[in-house]
Image (cartoon, rainbow, N blue to C red; front, side):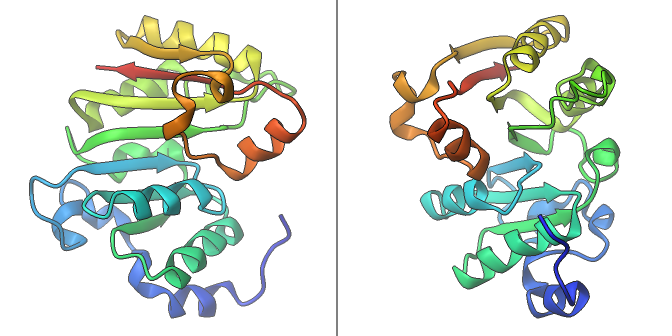
Length: 212
């Protein structure tokens, strides 16, 4: 999307929804966001303009949502969306997933979402995929025992690659489907912006839940 104008000023108007120095919250996100120590924390990496995370936050007001996006313009769109909806249980990080270990402490995350991550096919750089084993090992440190990683994509190559990486890193795979919208899992599914776009083009959506 095009770069938005006046990003700092507009982000400042929505200051309640993001942290200028999110690394300071490592290991204490619940406290920083005003939630109980035993509250569930769900994280989305690559939230785009926030359709998925804001709808999930609306559905589950008692769960703390943290949504991460590296592009400032896209982050702004998500933050303004949450602000307009006056949500109280969602906060944003404008940062790179490559630094994820600097943002979250050990066993801090109950559920992790990766929705339509960049497949990195044209560049032939599989190590940059967010489901590459180096990333997965970082996630495992952040995730509580029994936590889930929910992954959706339109890309067949990325999906097959990711299944192998999940298995390599010791995840147990459940709820695996190569046609989510015609599966038993669709009634509870929240569609992202990209998901709806691909579905409108007749592309099957792939999904799996990887459990520790």
